[in-house]
Length: 108
Image (tube, rainbow, N blue to C red; front, top):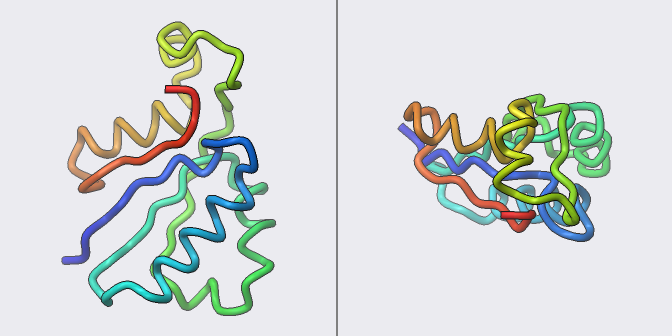
């Protein structure tokens, strides 16, 4: 079974572009037992993935998380009110054992 890393694709100032690029690079270079789960608005993530011709062949999975927590929002309140955000759903996936780890450069 591969190591599954859940990633907040909307985390950081240049997200999702740099986060998706990092996921693509990681899965290209990592051992074959790595899978990356990208959490965020599906259409935006797929738009970024379209820039990489080999993305469909990589162990990348997109999980739709339509709500985004902005950098100016209070993190504790936002996680409670935006339950379909990339941070909330990514952490839930980790808690439920669907991911081995969760990472975010977002407002945490």
